[in-house]
Image (cartoon, rainbow, N blue to C red; front, side, top):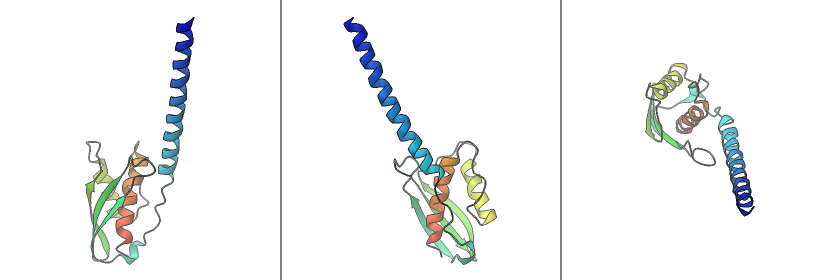
Length: 132
């Protein structure tokens, strides 16, 4: 009888902890989905090299920093400095290449990694805001 009570208490505690973890994860995902990426006017960029760091949201799971280079008033290069992880297929560089080609942060993100891609784009936005 005592064994059953202990087992039920353990299950209740595990369920409560799992529920709390799910709640925290869903809050972080909601925040990452809603990262605003509209603070850069690409027609007003000044030449130079600028760095940007995004803190990664409430739990800093996607913290990253980049260096951007603006040449001739256009975004020419994006280099990852810290926190950027690639899937092993060049997907992050492909994302950055899309931004450079489009001269916009409104690009297709990495399939299956939209939340992380938004964080990487936010660091680029922060760097480019310094170039205006």
